[in-house]
Structure formats: C-alpha cells, structure tokens
Amino acid sequence: RSLRIASLLRPSARRIKAFCAQTAADAEHARVLGIPATRIHVMGNGKYDGFPTGPIMPSPDLVGAVGQRDVVIGSLHPDEEIGFVEACRESQLRILVAPRYVSRVQRICRLLAESNISHGLRTMGAQGCRVAILDTVGELASAYALAPTAIIGGTFGRRQGQNLFEAALHNRSILFGPHH
Image (tube, rainbow, N blue to C red; front, side, top):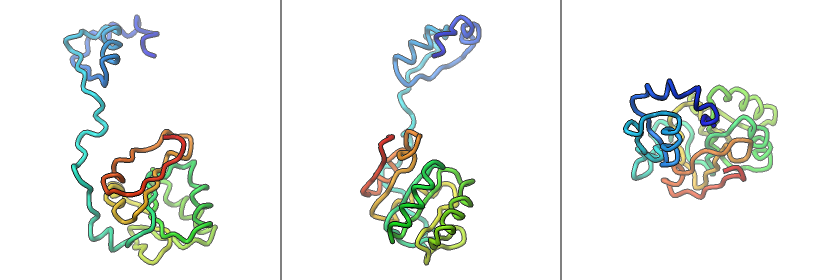
C-alpha cells in the first residue's frame, strides 16, 4: 500500500541503511520505494526462527499449580471470552485457559464466577479448580504438555489466529476455528 505514496517516501527510503524483506516481491516493492537494491536483503519469514526442535516442558512449579488438564486453550482473545464461558457451562472438562492478554484475567474470572464455574489463577494455585487461568507470561508453550488436546484462540473470533506450532511440538490434538 505504501507504493501509492512512493513519491513522498523516496527521500526517507534512500536513507535506510538496511532493509529486511520477507519475499522477493517485498524486496522489489522496497526498491520501487527508493531503497537502494544493495541495501535490501530477503530474509524469509522469521516468525518461526528459533523454535526449539522439541517441546518445551512445563516447570515443576507450573505442574504443581495447575495439574494435568483435559484441554489447554491458548491465546483466548477478548471476543472469544463469552463463547469460552458458554462452552465451560456445557462441559465438565478440566481446562487450562491462557488469555491472549493478561489484562483480561479479571474479566474472565468475573465471567466464570457469574456462571458458578470453579476457577483459579495459576499464580494462586488452581489444582482443584475446574478452570485454571494462566495469569503469567511465557508459560503457554510449555503448558500445552498438560493436556492431550489444545484449542488455539484467536481462530474463533475476528482475529486470524495464533500459531499452532507450540501445541504441535507436544504432539497434541489441535482444534482451531474458521479464522486461521
């Protein structure tokens, strides 16, 4: 889309020292914008660079706090929260849910409480609760080891989904919605 205003961007583009593009087409667009070709490097999609060759195992602290689960729901987005609670009402599964944004934890707790669904926070110990809420950052990749099934959030609402690789590294059954 920036090509529409290329004439405005050219003075700045010429000053870029290095430009990393995902594809050759992206590199060509950068060249058209005025970035010298010698400064453009096609790097590919770096989103998955650095992924481990195997699953990341949960810490003993995480296992002790939430225990084994029937399903892990990762990256639950705000527009999926109501549907999540409705699904909890319809099942007796032991669930570990990781909201996409830690700031949403209290809202999820409120929704679960309003539905009389037993829940607890990972940081407070949720071993005996039906729904454990991962209220930490950086543990989801390992938490997928705690259940045979993973549901990938962001795929049931307006978003275009989160990545499946963290759950796949644990060789879990993976469910995702239509927006992936």
